[in-house]
Amino acid sequence: MTALQTALAPFTLKGFYLLTWGTTLGANVWNTVSGYRTYKTLPRATFGTLQSRLTPLYFSFSTLSSAALLLTHLYFHPALISFSSFFGPLNWRSSEEGRQGLLILGALVPQAVNWFYAGPKATEKMFARHRLEKMEGKSYDEASPSEAMQKLNKSFAGLHGLVSSLNTVSFISLAGLGLAVSM
Image (cartoon, rainbow, N blue to C red):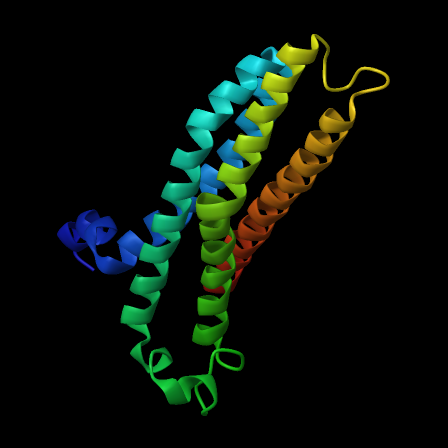
């Protein structure tokens, strides 16, 4: 490989694939670390407002970059696109290329669910809880919360848990892809 080819390597489709994977994984890690840090640092209402602005950007970026990763992967492995690839000799479960594609889907699908459903629903419940706190004049976690607050707490906790779990699945898939590609 010449010096020019080495210098231009990141600008090839393979370079794009690796940069996209690294950026997507890095965004996932950064979102987790910064989310924890801001939660511990900011007042809860401020943190909630900040997250309501940042998480849609993060979920859209993660979804779109994972989609770009999948499209690039399929470009390199067009045999995976055919209908028979799901059942034939080069299928998604038994071939290395197929398993890597499944790992990419394991990152893409959870982030898409977070972007289009779970994230907006969790944000909606969070703001509803903030409004109810102002109306009732007490915090969501005070002793003897109202029935409405208990219902919102339960709903928000479930949605927040879903968002966190989906994000974790995405992280594990992206980290697994890195291991699979490097072997």
